[in-house]
Length: 68
Image (cartoon, rainbow, N blue to C red; front, side, top):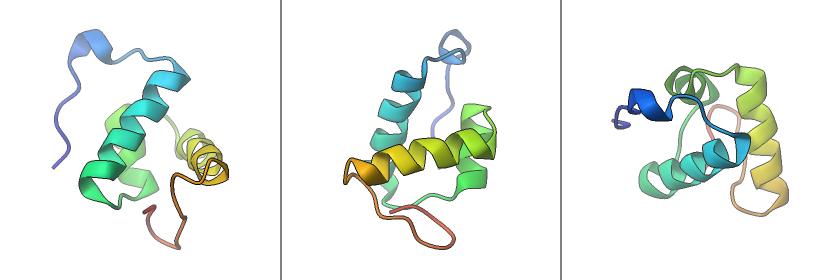
């Protein structure tokens, strides 16, 4: 399970979200767009943009249902 984000951290800059996504992926190894969207309270489109950026950086490899 992903830990709760404190209320003081709910408003994040994109770079902060990307860092958090990296931490989550390092811990969980895989996560789907919908779960991460709900967790970070941003749209799935935003999450897909972050995943695209992380894939270009070589940090993750996208698969059909989740990111690894």
